Length: 323
Image 1 (cartoon, rainbow, N blue to C red):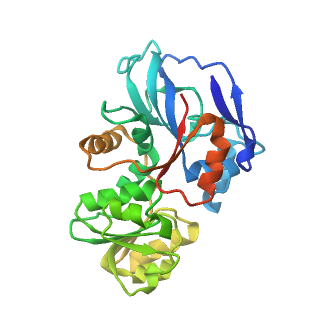
Image 2 (image 1 turned 120 degrees about the vertical axis):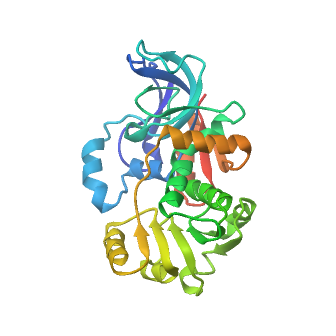
Image 3 (image 1 turned 120 degrees about the horizontal axis):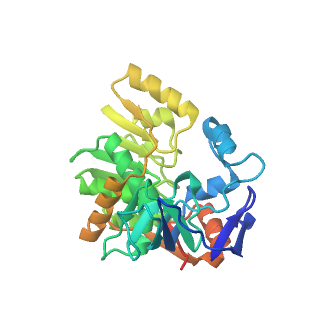
């Protein structure tokens, strides 16, 4: 099978396409023929190992001090089960599924074994592999952020970094929940955000949302570029500020703000689970939400795909067509 190997930390050029033997599933594993994977900002950060200081050391110890222990990147995949281990009863060959590979990664390959102890989700028949492959990172995190911020119908919600893989889902879900949504991102992406249901858009190249004197019930800062102090000032009383890309300083200030004011600063990583993934794929099947796909690349162009994501101009998701 073809696999994009990750042999050392660094720029996209460290990714190498090779032919290797396909894996064989263990007793509690399924073997998935990967049809679709994605390239997220997190994949690129892990490849060059550009992580926040507070998690840098433990993750480096896990991933490998000198070079990565894990041979292939890729956190999201969708494909077809082609074989199952002897202890597997809930899946069978022919099942079309999608999954999050977690810290073991490995989606940039023709085949991937996953234990059934991980959340593997059946794909709805009417939803494409490309669409469901974007759920584990973008969809799950967007849903998690909105739930933790307790977004309610009628509230004013601002989403900073609204045109990324997480943001495009957050805009759609917040609108679906009945919120009045303001989406902040680059000039070139504003039309897409309007088409997803954003009631107002802000071009960050021309306007700083923390200086326009508008206030919001909820601010979700996915990219972590907003001024902490001014963002808190932009909240209404009992407003909630969710840090989607938290730094240590922001978490410390957030705890103090939550303790000393009526406003809450929230931060918590999302975990992929079968129930939420099935809920989101069901909303896709109904046509309530959709996956926003910017570009598609074959696995042979994995370096080019990583380079494009690192430019910071993608809108929605970048797809890798593996099979």
